[in-house]
Image (tube, rainbow over all chains, first blue to last red; front, side, top):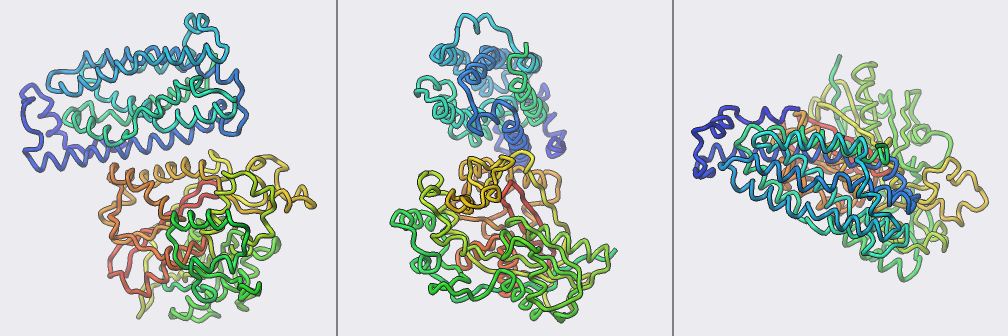
Amino acid sequence: MTLADAVPVDAADAAAGPTADPTADPTADPTADAAADAFVADILRGLAIVWTDFETRLDQVPIIDKLNRGAFRLEDYRALLANLRQQVIDGGCWIARAASQIDVAHFELRSQFLRHSITEHRDFRMLEENYASVGGDVAAIRAGEKNIGSEALSAFMFHRAGQPNPFDLLGAMFIIEGLGSLKAAGWAEVIRDQLGLAEDQVSFLAYHGANDDDHLAEFAHWVRQAADHPNARGIVKTARVVARLYLLQLEELDHV
Amino acid sequence: MPDAYITAAGAHLPGPPVGNAEMARHIGFLDGRSEALGRLALRQNRITSRHYALSPDNSVSASNAEMAALAVADAVAKSERALKEIDLLAACTTQGDLLVPGHASQVQAALGIGPLELVSVQSVCAGALIAAKAAALQVMADGKRAAAVVGSEFSSRWFRPGFYPETALADQGHRAALEFLRWTLSDGAGAILIEPRPNERRQSFKIEWIKLVSLAHAFPPCMAAGTVPARRTERDGGWSHRPDTALADGALVLWQDMVLLKRIIRAWVGEYLKLVDAGHIVPERVDWLLCHYSAENLRQEIVSILRATGGMIAEEKWFTNLHSKGNTGAAALFVMLDEFVVRGLVRPGQQVLCIVPESGRAMIGFMMLRAL
């Protein structure tokens, strides 16, 4: 990947160094401004490529393939929810940990991570309600274990979240939120229709689809906030790792 | 090894232009609902005129192969070559006149030239670039001196009411997808000539590269004929397994899966962005973009993604004649290139990027040209 080459190294390092002035107006220098624009476009392009490859591979995962070809069963829906739940409960936690690692120079990003953490950390409740409504035993999934894909995904997220200024995790958010805005609502609709369920039985998936409309524009804003820091160069790679581990989570259903 | 140059382009668009209000006279009248869906499709594709080889009285002005031959003859007439100098004919179409033999054989016979070597391509829109790449490589590596490449379609004959039994029209979602194609695709042929050296006195383009990517491993058929959507991936789901009922089942109808298409469009954008990322396409250095797209609304879908990712080629650089010549499938790129050359828009040294996505089973082709 050559995205990092697009950023002038000294500009990024200087801004990240101890002498960086957090109150400096980032728009004051037109050259730096243009470089940041180019950096954001390079990151978004890299992410779009990771996303499209991910989306194509998602359709090849057995459970999603069953959904696409109208062969989805109620037990598949229960398995999907049960397996997602073990990772969804961690969602708010790794973002909160990451937020605690963000320095004052990136105060706005820290606020964003915190806000994000709050919206994520209640998600599992809706998932559990959906699970119970299709005959799932909530006590059983609460006592359940992560599948081996979820273990890898969660471990990677917490590992990255423990680093100082882990802005590469914006790449992880891009994949997870992309799943919400571009895939989950469509899945909710197909699952509802194929299994003859009511709206409130697929609300966990449907809710994520309705949640973030202007995914890309908002995301560009956050990448720009982090653009002055060297860790922002890892956004695309982290997205690629998270995309692969997310697929692994779906490929390894019930394999604990 | 010599380079390969496009030294001429030509087209054959049968009959007079047909306006939106006259379409049904050529492709036939299904019912009132069809007319309403047709108006919706025309608002989406924004095509205002097209050509049909099928006349209102059911007579046929040219077969698919004959249209292809006329387009090759038109390209040759605009070149510094003679028809008899052609030593390779690469022909592509979506659905030929016959099931057997190969389409290129039929085109050669219609041209009445030979002996020569053939490449016969059956794909959908991107077939134009599969054929062009095969021809360019033969010019570069096999000593061919004048290769004709032609794409042609006779879509209208499949749109007549006899192909649409009640069963195919019952499902409303499926019906909207059938009607979209019925009111979008039309007839015609486009051709180019590829030689190992440029013209002495006329416009030529050096072929910098041609790249095609197919994602058929990951997607089921998206635009298909010969089966119904529900049986599209079954081993014996095709029309030939039920010769007596295929027509009544709606298995001969050309259809498109509009939901799947949206997923495939994102995958196409990804393939394009990979070429940008690798430096093969530098958007600001592209002077002209000739992109085949089936409908104006699908173009809008991708523009916002391209803008955000630095992959956008400014809209004033886009050239198309979709709106006046219709969507002619495998012929479309060369029909576009012909008009682009005739209008004399390009300047020496300019870079011309051609893009042809094919929804059939998720393929996309790219060709980079340098104007001389």
